[in-house]
Length: 453
Ligand code: MV4
Image 1 (cartoon, rainbow, N blue to C red):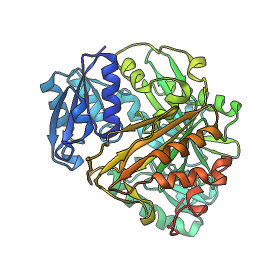
Image 2: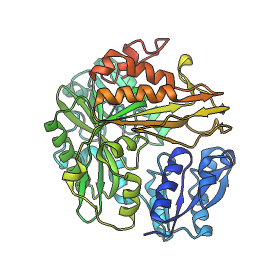
Image 3: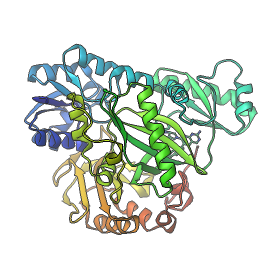
């Protein structure tokens, strides 16, 4: 096991990582920007190093600054959390070349899967179903390829992910102009204008499979997460298991995810994302990190994914097989509490948290770095807490979530907490029969916002 881990992140995930390290008897080094001096992760770690000014580019995204902090503190491994450098294969490689263990997948595997069109090629090779579309990038006759797929089609950026740079094309006449716009946007956003085409699914659900692999041939899949409730590609509610899957589909999705990660030589933890519609699932992308929503899987499967990823990175084998990993012990929700104003288009609301009452009791977990007196900086994402609930079944988990959200009180800034209660109380949500358009189509927003896919 490692002696000292540098946590290359901030906020609740840095706190989560520090707690896991402490339980493992591993010392921790926090890094922080000038805007995060008062953040909880700085106080919790054994050591803390300021790595630069507030803008992430000058601190949390500055690989050299992070690596220097690891060197001067004598850390032997780096945990990247999510976002920032977490899926940057060059950073993972730089860690390796300086004798540091990167706690995550090997750079070769994350390179293969990070580029979405090449990830799809790996999937096809591994007989994992993908959305019908171009074989690789749009190259020669795009009009012919789009016609063969059948309109409407979706243009996606190969270097993108999480919905950035997607464009819907409903008829042939719009294709050329949309391709040009998409390529320009992709170039500006990702430094790479390559795009590919897919058939547009009109009412998909987003269902993802958490996997873990030990790099010695062992790989398991956990129960799925359903992240269908999103707004502008920002997930709001995640749950496990999905109310839409049958045991048969679940098993096939898990088997497909394991085939894919084995084919890519993937190791450590990761997530295989699928769209699910009309009883069929289609691979779309891999997230080569521990995700925000990992706690619902921890609750339902009864595992500690943060501990597991540290142990796997330290060279330990998987401690259990598929049968244990796939066990479903109940139902879990995660509600992302953001410093945002739902009545004003979810505009960010940074500022000082004057008072804070966190929920508790049976089956309630809160992952947060916030406290009364903490000022939410304006430089980073607006997630201030995750309320995670666990109960024997979905109806009781909904009741538990409503109870927990009712206990939560954040004074001083606006948050998404009450919006979550609205979602949970909606009959369509309670029935479990919703798709990715749920928030827009069920009057949960005050003003009709423009919609794309
Ligand atoms: C799609 C799609 C429909 N058809 N692909 C959005 C995030 C990215 N990971 C993939 N996304 C989508 N891909 C095809 N071929 C619709 C979406 C999509 C979506 C997916 C999951 C959850 C919410 C969504 C909201 C809008 C669009």
